[in-house]
Length: 209
Image 1 (cartoon, rainbow, N blue to C red):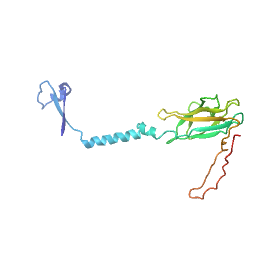
Image 2: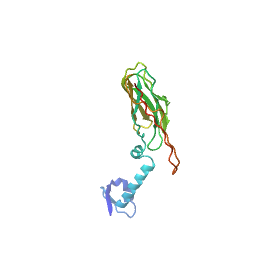
Image 3: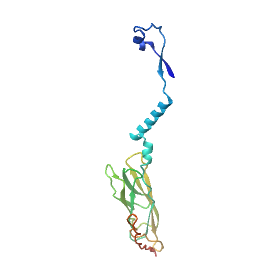
């Protein structure tokens, strides 16, 4: 099977006027070339896909595998006029390979009670996974009520989505009754196929009146 195309005669003047060729009248010259078969087309498409993936040009696939893992919302509670609530630690991790990011904390209501450590990330940020300490330190005069803020994790790569973590601070009235925060946290460790780690006590305390 052949494919026929027509080209200007001046591009083939030397060939057309060479010995053994009959003079041609001005007009179009017919040139026949082998047609591309379906098998060669499929092979080319396969090669192109492999090249895109290996060269890193398949950014939709790469971006989908490299995002922040979800971080749950944070909640702090304290009693008006008493000590600040305990700090909490969040860890920014990637669903794929590590990437650089920076973080900021903003108090939406109630003044500047929300902060994070570290609070500066330089020009290039830090790489995941990375632990961030979150602190709620309301002013002693902050009235009883519910206040909001947020922590924003911003990646250095535009292909990765920014994550916003809501933060809530509840300041209870001195006469209110509520659950106190759990001191520290619970951590378990064990060897693979090893025995069950021992249990730990969990104190449930009343922080109010």
